Image 1: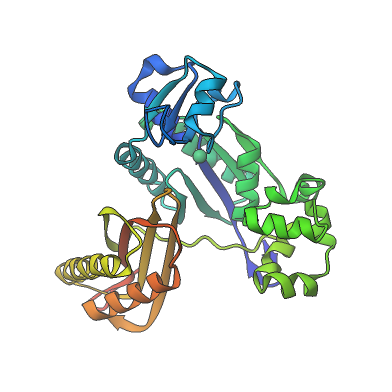
Image 2: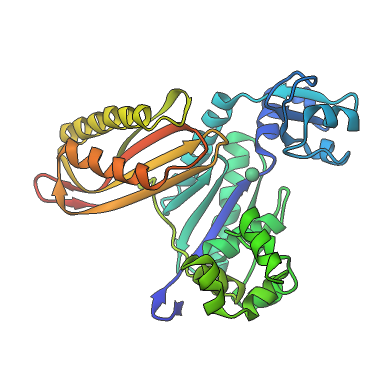
Length: 355
Ligand SMILES: [Mg+2]
C-alpha cells in the first residue's frame, strides 16, 4: 500500500480492558462481577480519586477521575482498593513480553496499550495475527483485551476504542471515511482536552468540520501538528510505529526512589543506566548506532524517544549525552516515575550487523 510514495502497513492495536480493575480481579476472584474501583487511596473520606472503575461500577455512573467520596455516594457498598502500581507494572511487562514474542515491531504507548506493526500482509493475515494476540494474552495472562485492526496506528486505535470491552474490530480502508463521519472532534487520537477546547472555540465540532477546515488557518493556530491532525480527519494516517522494544537491543530501566520533577535526580539515574548499558553492550561485543529513552510518568503515561548517531559507537558518553538531550526535550509538569535507556542498531565488533 502506498500513499504519496510512503509505504504503510497494517497495525494491530491492543488495549487492555479496565486494566487496573482487571488485574485486581485476577488476584481477588471474589470481586468478579461486583462494582469496585481502584483508587489513589482506599479511604473514601480522603480526597482520593477513582483511577479505574470495574464495568459493573460504571453502571452506577462511577468513572475515572471521580472523587472517591462521590463514587461511594453513587453506590454505598462500593469496594475501594488502593492502587498497587508495582503489581500492575509487572503484569504489564508480561503482556508486552507476549506481544514482543510475535516478532513484529511493537510500540508501547502506555502501561496497557501497544501498536503492533504487522506490515504489508493484507487484512486477512492481520486479522489472524490480531486474534492470535488476543488469544495468547487470555491464555498466558488470563486478562481480556480489545483489538483494533486498521491501516495506520491512529485508525487502529480508534477502532480499538470503538470495540471495547473484550472486542475485536476491523476498519478497512474503504470504511475509514464513513467511520469518521459525524464523530465528535475529541474522538480523534492526538486531540487532547486543550486542543479540543480550542477547536470548539473555532466552531470545529466534528471530525468532518476539521476535514473541511482551512489548513493554513489550522497551522497558524496549532503549528505543524495541524498537518497530521488535518490528514487524520480526511482519512489519511501516515503514522509510523516507533519501535522501542526491538529484540536486538540492550537496555536497562529503573523506577526512581520516588516520583520526581527534579531534573538533577533524573539525570543522575540516566548516568547510572547509561553506564550499565554501555558495560553490557561491551560485554556482549556490540557497538550501537542509536540510543533510546523511555520515560514513564506518575500517571502511568509513557513516552519513548530515540536518536541515531552518525557512526557506530561503544561510548558511555554518547549514550548519556543523547539520553540527556532526549530527556530535556520531554520535560513536562508531571513528575517522572521510571526511566529507561536502550541502545539499538547493533553491530558485532567482528563486523556482522544485527538489526
Ligand atoms: Mg486500557
